[in-house]
Amino acid sequence: MGTASGDDDRHVMHQGGGVNLSARRPFSEALRSGLAETFFPDDPFRGFGALPPKERAWGALKYFVPALEWVPQYGIDKFKFDLLAGITIASLAIPQGISYARLANLPPIIGLC
Image (cartoon, rainbow, N blue to C red; front, top):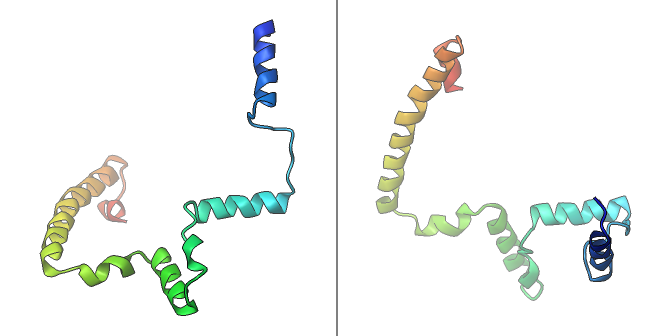
């Protein structure tokens, strides 16, 4: 359904800063930028340049293992709530898994895997 206004709109998109699909990048550059966007979407290492190497390494490690950030503040009061949440989820998930296995005519142990 190409109308004159529709054709003009497409032309304006290319002229006015829309997505340029005609520009091609080398595969290696596209792969590198895609992987960087996938694994580091928020650029977490931006402020690390001025830090000493030991602090840079600790910051990078905390990015990949987030528990290192909150474990020092974790206490028994929070553990009680986590234990209650675990018991609640287990009391729901275990029977549900067994039931789904039975519905599929499989041994109940399969529902726990």
